[in-house]
Image (cartoon, rainbow, N blue to C red; front, top):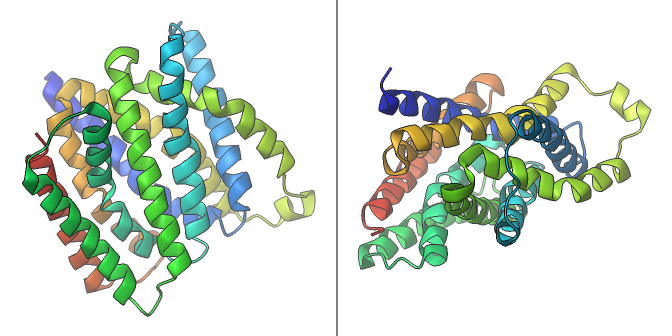
Length: 289
């Protein structure tokens, strides 16, 4: 199999795994408190990452990389999981996925800011158009809209975009899956302490349903670690610019999963706004350099 083809396959698997994150979090947060869910999933993923780093004898990151790893951990290990878990107490996963349509755009914006690149003026035109589209949808949707949930989702997208951009920058020297693994380990002491402090009672754990346990396992193993392994491998094999475009289909995959698995209503307005956001993202990426 050609390296580029393998890259597209691995990238697609990674995107498919990430697409299931919000629907799974929606199920899990109904049984687990958001802080415990965030910290426990990070702790489990960090222990698994430590095992792989030891078995594969990966070198430790340099001291100069620790600050970037901390930013990555703050964005994708702590910020995005916690903020989305809190948001999904107020909105459906289908509603939240509309905001995820802006994630590639937010990642590109932080890449510009952190990398010192100077994009063309049309980059900012598409960026503002995409942000305005999603913000307008959140403001006009009076049926299920929750101002608290919308603000939390926007904050989650910003945090994740920062974490993605910082992690991508660091992966040039440290390696793709190694970045998320070391970021998880950097956050492990705090996450483990908070997991223990927020442990549910035995009575509460006895009431947790099988779908909630499955969702908890999914976000801990697949969303937090395994998805990154496939995603970063795909970027390395097929090229960041090419395989990175697969991220544009993630919102549609997420909406399909929300409808099929959770039986949530996906309105035509959600699809139209998501499509518009994806078009804006594609335009912004075209004029990013």
